[in-house]
Amino acid sequence: KLLGKIADLRATSHETLDVVAFQILRGAPADDLAEAVQNAQAMQRALGHLRPTPREAGAWRPIAQALQHALAKMTQSDASMETLRAAFEPLSEGVIQCLQVFGNPTSTPLRVAHCPMAQGSAGASWVQRKGTIDNPYFGAAMLTCGAFRHVVDSGTHLMGATKKTNPAPQT
Image 1 (cartoon, rainbow, N blue to C red):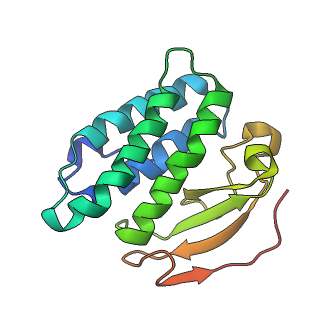
Image 2 (cartoon, rainbow, N blue to C red):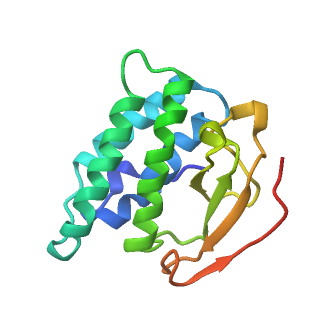
């Protein structure tokens, strides 16, 4: 499920996508606050060690700031699952931006999923590897609510070279 190769991160921004995209997703759908907060703290540390190339720095800086801001909310001492899920949306948007700007650096396809009921029915997206919906916004209550919007193959960029999928929403 989790790559967990924080110690092996090389010093470029796009290579941390594995860490950013999947760490918190393990705890959120399972309603495991302690695990999700612990994973958010690990992500904070990993992001702090990234050194983008000069070519990447301009694009990376605003994305990294947004990711750090979301992670700071997730790791507050009074964090709750509600706080974590509210902050997960901007974190996910940052990961989606990474896929748009830097592409998918992993060796497997990544899926962009969307739940129309998340964030007070405004809808929210997230990135996952699994081929079945694993909704982080509602946990066990609505674990399979949502649909895949895109599949981003290894080495491709979101919106540039993606395969759109239009299965019926899973609820």
